[in-house]
Length: 501
Length: 136
Image (tube, rainbow over all chains, first blue to last red; front, side, top):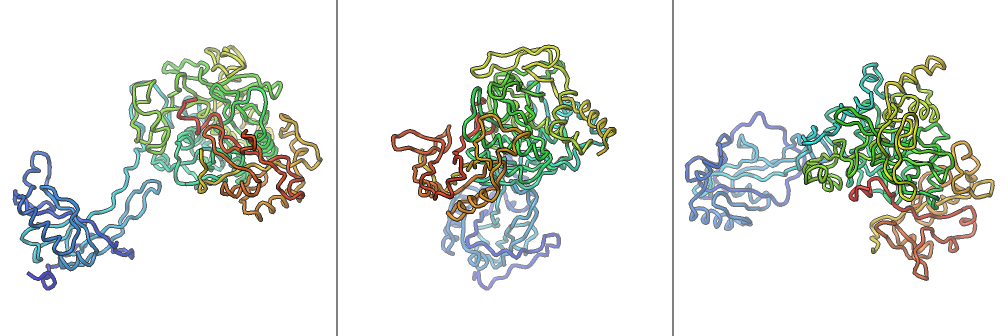
């Protein structure tokens, strides 16, 4: 039979998408099925191929070898032979000549990692109704092959927008974090952070389906000087911690700035350049007694930002004497822990201390929600699948591991890294309630509205103390206490009635 | 650790205040930051000098801006050898073998070096994304 002269009858396929303008690839991979022992072709579409029936789709070995030799004789590369299929490859014109057909590229919607819903290209033979299927009837291969399937590009699975279950108590975003920060009541007042721009300088931001599912708004990632890969968050830290902002203030506009870890000052500059209302930073250095050279530049940048009216929030530290968390102009975020029984105590993972550098400065100002030692696995947060945090926290039983998979895009963590964005969320709510909010007023209202923390000890802080107790009233362990969005926003609204917007 | 030339290096150029005196270690706050700001015209000139020398410069915020370039551009311009340390970040190797977190200014043209207080190599933070795997 001459493959060049035989013509397979065309079969209309009215529901298939239009062909693409993309060219055919130079090398096409395909899978051929020699005639199945059971008599039902593998590519019949509706065939239910399962473990109990798969034997019917095997082919006699001599037929398989004969088919492979026929493909090789036609010029194809035979890559793999199994009892069921033959994997082979060749240029598009070889396929078209051998199987008397015409191949096209179709554009179809796909969900790509880091790109979300977009368009992918798929090869097709338009004469068959099943996408990617090539018929063999009427060709030189009809007696050995029952059909051919064109391989297609597969995409990595997207992580679930829903957090996985765990066998221990933790907080989930957005609901638990919002409720524990007393933000739900504020949302029901119609105050959700709308119109407020929050810049977050961190490890980057991955467009996790969690954010898309809930309609949160994030601007494209801005790279700080020296940073690379705007679509990737290799750490997962920035992605996860940003969920704390949205939990408290779901309608803010997030401005993610990805830093190079050895060029943080410049990334902070980039954030200032975007002129946001609030900058939140969940990182810092341990500076128990003195600042170092780059700290002076960062201190000046922080001071300049606050002088411009930008509210700047930094984490106090997780056993560190955190800088810039102890700079007098920042709102310093400490940690308080709310357990399953709603008992509130100081987080023994979070820093509290009197600064030896800025005399009279006590840290923190106010607390967010933070877990306990040893690893503060307290808030289930979305991360980029397989990133550093996903890998590092996976495996084992709590508290050794967070009981999630290493590549599921979810991890349980907190630290004062979580507290800072929670405070940023509350500051955003206050800013919407009272647009005239200044950094000084924001710190005052956060502290004035906070829930006092009277139990527990903060973390030991390197070379300064071995842990300080929380007690009635403001204290070094927890500052003014756990942030209370409702109380602080009521304060902001009161200022609005006094002074207008 | 050897330097990958494809991985850019960055440093922070800290400028002297317009008033002439250097800021104290812990004095700069929003209330007094204006006293520590550099003279705008000389800041712009120094930024341009670095751009002309093949560095990318960031915006000036407060008293500093960053410069970014391949490591060999830094080594050539400042006359040092750089090394990347996993915990300390980028360091300048000195002749006696010690590592410094500041770059020397003596190879720079005098008018460029004059308004510069220091060119600092910024170490990674002690807590935050870069230290997560240690759960610090």
